[in-house]
Amino acid sequence: MTDDLVQLLAVQDLDTTITQLQHRRAALRESSGLAVVERELAALDAERADATARRAVLTATQKDLEQQIAVISERRSAIEQRMYASTSSSGRDLQAMNDEVRHLTDRRAELEELELVAMLDQDPIDAELAALRERAAPLEERATELRRHVAGDQSEIDAALGEAVTARAAAAALLPIALSDRYETLRARLKGTGAARLVGTHCDGCHLELSSGEVEKIRALPPGEAATCEQCGRILVPA
Ligand SMILES: [Zn+2]
Image (cartoon, rainbow, N blue to C red; front, side):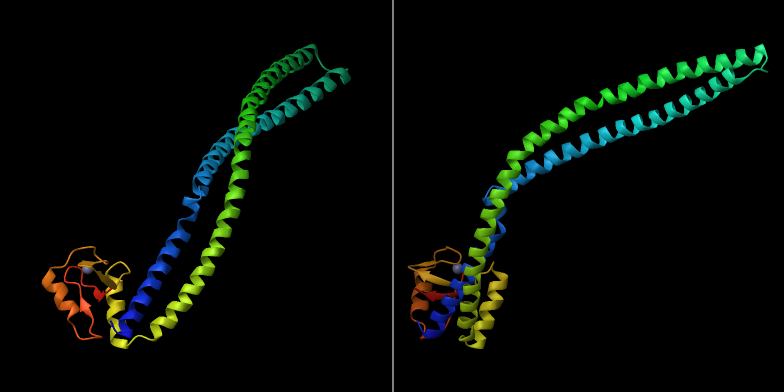
């Protein structure tokens, strides 16, 4: 094995390390359990939003009824004042005003009844919201703790990634351009692995066994000449 092929395997190993670190980093939220907790919290949030919306409808109804009641009360007071102040009204006018007062009193009682219902209907929703808050509290705590862990793991991985990327750039700079180009082309096509070791009679890129004739041919190649795995097409370096 010549220095170039040793160097190529070093680049491949660093590329593999970098890919593994990137995958580990991307999977941290799932692997730490944070993703599960966040999904549970999101579900509780949706329930809370639903309950809050139902409560808002009742509050709006209550407010609307209160306004209607206020208008009716004002109108009734005005009529009553006119009745008590009036000396000139006819008996018929007084009777009409009396009827109107009675009608407004009944209407107000009806609206007050509806207002009470709107108020009482809010109680179970308030209980629901309190229960949701109670269920969310320990989950929020757990999420905070997990986020701290994830952030810690992320900075560890980032440090390792930084080192690997620097080492990779230095190692890749030493490769002959033709070999480097061939490696990059294969790597792009073959899931990140462009160079593999010949371990015994196996290619460790595709894990398939090579014929003994093929193995002999590869081992007999002049130093520095890169072989190709006939199964997967990767650059094959005798280990
Ligand atoms: Zn192979």
